[in-house]
Length: 79
Image (cartoon, rainbow, N blue to C red):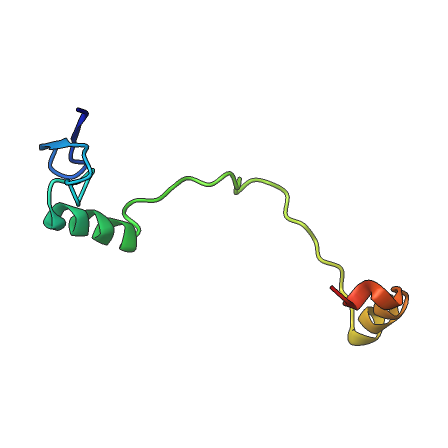
């Protein structure tokens, strides 16, 4: 049997199907953790780099877009 520590209070929890709040020891610890995620106190780092060069989207008006779409084949809009 595997024993893990509750991520919130560090109490030991059995990792079994009957431990309904695993890896948490209780509903309270589970909700405390959820609240931290909701308040953005916790986050998963993403691969985006704030110093990375931003992509410039070309300035197109509706006529430019319509012209590009008219160049597409008939089956372009079909699934």
